[in-house]
Length: 476
Ligand SMILES: Cc1cc2nc3c(=O)[nH]c(=O)nc-3n(C[C@H](O)[C@H](O)[C@H](O)COP(=O)(O)O)c2cc1C
Image (cartoon, rainbow, N blue to C red; front, side):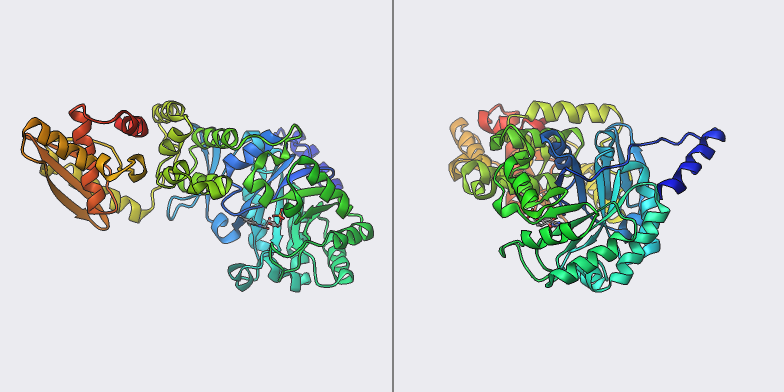
């Protein structure tokens, strides 16, 4: 493989073609962030690297989705985005800080499709991994993931095609088979394709996370083959950095790969010890802001860190958050988020995909049309979502506060009229000869009225300091 590639590089140089030569990823003696759907997105990968991970894997991305994506450098964010042109979603976002340590995990059942994806992506990643361990129905039905464990010929063909067609190292991640000898045989067949290493989850296809892992099987495999083994499946026994190395040693493996223990606390990679939860979340949210991560993804990852603390008042307040700004307010990063979002607007790019899904575009246009109609021409508008968790009791709700204010001032109580567009609602609050509305479309009428009352209170200087702080982001 290597010897085939060298003459191409020499030829390219002699033809004046610049080929960036990158150091080939070495899979020995490494701490690795495992592929995890929804967790292994850019901010978490960068945080894992900051914490001491040597290599980070993306979440599994399916070939059919990647193959139709368009590579788009995003100057405002300093990222490279792979965008699905049919619906505008960002399938994969990466940046230069991680390129030399990033492995993309692919879900595939087809060598040619996998190769096409590899060719599209190889300049932005350091390695390509094929998922051969996922037991989910979606994967199995598509002949991907653990389905490949029972079709070693197909698995080997995919790997051989990639190894001979790509300039970056190729690996795969499997699960052990019910029998040790069978597992060794499978690993030998796969190793013969030219792959650089093999990740092994020390459980069988039918075993779940609650079942004990089998480090002894990995040890037997590692002794029988030359290829670097990346041991995985030990999260249950991992509570600090040393535990990672212990699992690696128990498995006699070249490297160790961690999923759930890192999902809960990614500072498990940190030699100096775990970081306190709040510091971890703060650092994670900063990266989400820096790289304009999708709020639902940020929320999922923070929920994984908070776990049972979601039941605390702060956790409950967090669960109500819809935007990165709202999440940041809870960890005193409101100003940081505001500044960055302003900066991104100035840079002329919101950071989101420029291609908007047709349905989303139609929906947005419809809402904008309504909002710019006569109905709202003399209405005082602010963008203020209603966050129930901000208010300690019903007595503090904006509508109640406004009602009390009206009574105190001897004015008529406020009146509300609400408009509905598809499943979204927006209210106008009429009070003392003026009309108020929040431009944020709420999920129900009640919330829309509260949003309108919130804008009225703000305009009248009646908003409680706490609410002002929580909604500060949304005032401009
Ligand atoms: C939230 C989550 C998402 C996962 N997604 C993937 C994935 O995309 N690809 C994959 O090969 N394994 C995936 N896994 C499995 C892990 O990579 C790993 O094999 C498994 O959790 C065992 O390792 P652990 O004991 O360190 O958690 C996922 C696991 C979790 C918890």
